[in-house]
Image 1 (tube, rainbow, N blue to C red):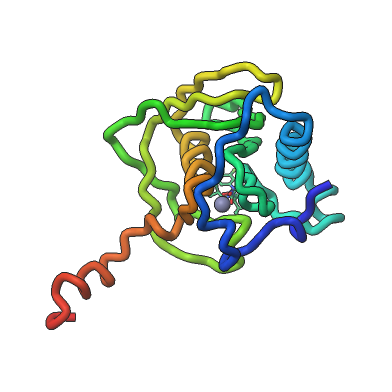
Image 2: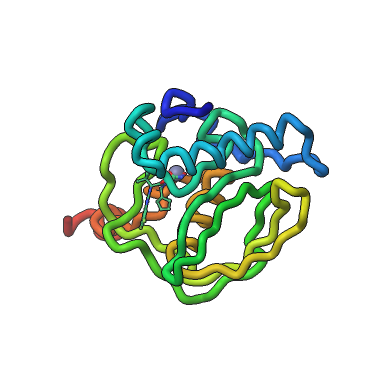
Length: 182
Ligand code: UDB
Ligand code: ZN
């Protein structure tokens, strides 16, 4: 069973790598790993298990976060209409997205980041994602709201991007543009 000890933290170079495509059909080993990641997020949301193993209640985890630079992630998250998205995906890809952007009120955190980093993280409001699930089926998902933000956060991990890379730091921007004025 995966615990927080298995979660690599900020500063580990694996979090900055571009993860490699998973060869399909997925090997038994890759399926086992992805199922363990899904079990981790499910377990982390069970109050008794979370307390016993000191798990942070997570909604998603990407393979680089357990030190495996492969394009796969697991999510266990309920949308605003009470629909549960509980799945592992191999080689997920955004095939289209809205122009409109959104952000999580109160910013984002990350299982691999042990500090609070405030600021809005701009995300697409709506995305269409394609990938292959643990059953080996190709799936296409049209997502919005929290679920869409979780998928985008996990997809970023596969491309070496951390949520705070996307925070618009207006002060820093201003410093670069108007160094004499700040
Ligand atoms: C999380 N959970 O799992 F808006 F019901 C975060 C942690 C880092 C705080 C545990 C989270 O945001 N839960 C949440 C948010 C809501 C409503 C709700 C539960 N992740 C997963 C992660 O680090 N994956 O790599 C961070 C999230 C920030 C935005 C999406 C993923
Ligand atoms: Zn994260």
